[in-house]
Length: 220
Image (tube, rainbow, N blue to C red; front, side):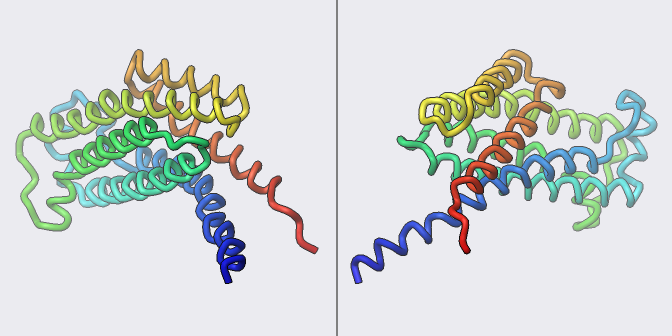
């Protein structure tokens, strides 16, 4: 009985390891999709556009859908981060801390940006009449993600790359790419450097999926 319990333990812990990389792929796809779906005026400095932007039901629905996609993406990232931590020889406490901070800030950003359209869509809250109020809400949401969130994501990438290189979990070129992404995000937290973060997670996840498939013995 003890032997069967020991034999069944690897099977129970193997499934999260196989699913984890796919959650990284899901994060990258959903996170980028959430950004693309979330509508913003073509000319963000045009006060007239902001004044009437959230009075459009299509814009409100797009914002809520975008926020939901980003929330689902962040939940997938938590799973990916947890799986990556399981692969390390010694658990990466700092990696988990930086990743958790990133997830928290990204959630706050999505909720702040969707506060006005979501309030109107779900609670019939009147849309603020002042264009400046709606524009500043969106600016705050972007700042939380692209400044504070980018710093946390950069620290996560640097820590994860170091630990993955130490334990030979990822190829050397990918960990070096992680260092480059981390430096870009830590030095200049802005939209362009931030784009490389989900791309690095995507490539990392694909590498882990291929390695997991290669290490799985073929069955006749």
